Length: 100
Image (tube, rainbow, N blue to C red):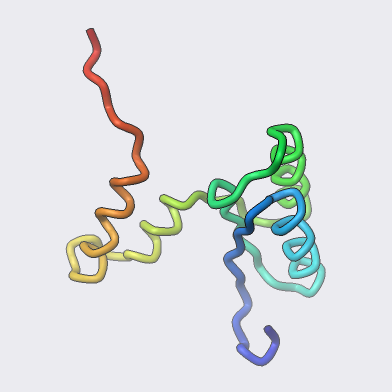
């Protein structure tokens, strides 16, 4: 990581309470800015997931979401690269139902 010169890391894992939490804490201790995408993974239990996310946030990680990351990477959704990301963002939105 040090050889890249990048000060920030975006991280997600299969399980937040194991695969994400420990690398996040280590990277924070090493002085990196860390953004965690917890909805890109999960944990065996809701309680374990919640505890991991709270622990990472308390340690200084920014908590974000898949949609937020995609929107930030798109930068300008009117540009070709941004427009290419838009279908992925829309596919993650829950279906809207009309109020009866």
